[in-house]
Length: 180
Image (cartoon, rainbow, N blue to C red; front, side, top):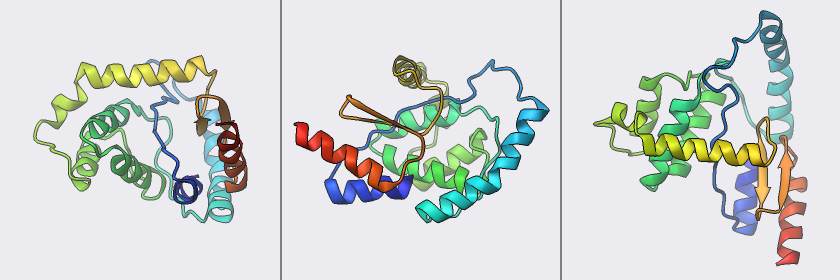
């Protein structure tokens, strides 16, 4: 998906704004052994599809983790003008380096990597303003009726759910451009 979005940015100069979404919010029931087995069984297919359709090499991190600290850290990065760089590094850490992005040390390392001040990083992760920004994004996703990722909203009018080929995304961008 990332390579498709990068192509859209280059070809159409689109503005991409990443929003927070929690697949497993705090307080969710534990993943059952049967469901975890299904997740693990589907990973080889996910890795193959990412390679074949998007040219991405995946080495996926652990499932069932609490992503909220990562989402809060991303809101901090956005406020510092480094949201896109943090997001890219976070996705690479999880999807290609199999890192556990619920680990505060991993998040701090990513923040340092993109040039963020990490002197008071634990305070950043406890900052109620960043937590509220994550909650606002999650609420917006629920308003759209979303229950999974990826999901893309174009011009607040068109919703594309699931990892779609570049040509599908290109058609939506062209339709939006025709209408404006």
